[in-house]
Image (cartoon, rainbow, N blue to C red; front, side, top):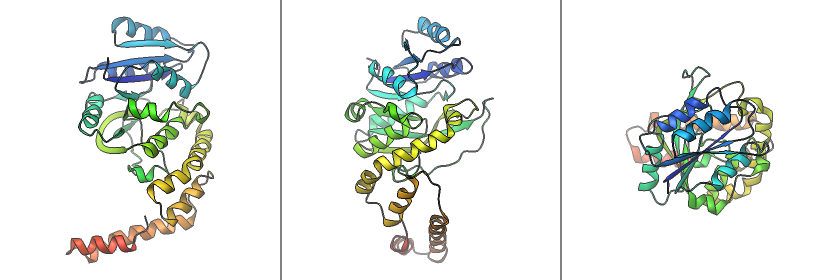
Length: 289
């Protein structure tokens, strides 16, 4: 039984798919299976995937009878997964050689963690690096922003506990899934950079930008009360989540609070730098979570 099951859902991905599969083959950790789910592609995607499967027994190709879209294709892939740990990748992204080894090592050493999220580079269509937006990488920020990214791994046990990807959440199916893991298990973020996420004009995120925002707002509304209860959110954060779950951006009201937090932290560090305990005590007393 393969230790790690990797699902690669793809639709018309012939342009970058070879690079994506090659990056899996180049992993320093070799105990994996790759399940490629071709969602009725009309280009040479299936032929490319089949050629890799013929050359490596760790690679399996499944072809959907009808176009099912991303969340359903993920479910098809994981229904056939045999591994202890689960992850998935995209046809246009690239995994660094330590992708699997870092994530597997962390889960092996931390049995209380159900899912781990690592850092990643952002690349353009030519593979060149550009600015990283630097989202807050903490589970407490998850109710406000989908910050898990594309470099992650989770246990089969938590997948069996929370169920399949929600097909009605297309365009935000991953965010919905990460929220369910965070609410039913232990999600941890680590600083290791193990992945390359490609931004291109034909990606789902770009093609369905408006729908993505709408679906993200639905997910935030769906789990708002659960996050408030589990993480004991402050009144300020409850209002912020209430506002975001309606599909809106920050109002100036919230920006003022963010400025307050910035000034409080920096003035506290400036005037109380000689006493670490007093600095922390003061900041905790007057901060807004």
